[in-house]
Image (cartoon, rainbow, N blue to C red; front, side, top):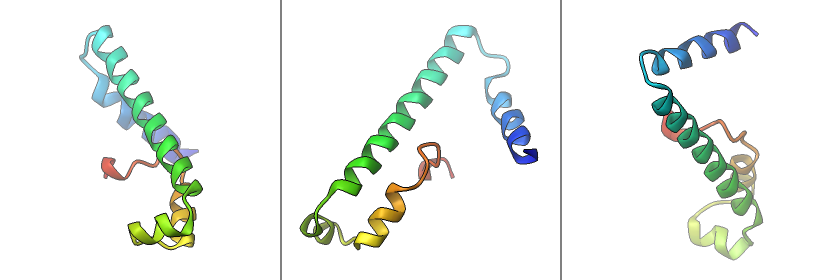
Length: 77
């Protein structure tokens, strides 16, 4: 719980001083990014062995990635 509160405080700093329309756009972009991640991970889980081999991934690595939560964005780090 403590970490969630800190996350909410950190996230609110990015929106401080913005107009409502800018905030709405930022929220929309974030929701769209989360949808993209969810969709990509769902499709990754559905790939067959030949496609995974082409990508250089093992089945276990693909499943591990596909089981990550949608909000866990590797580009945000």
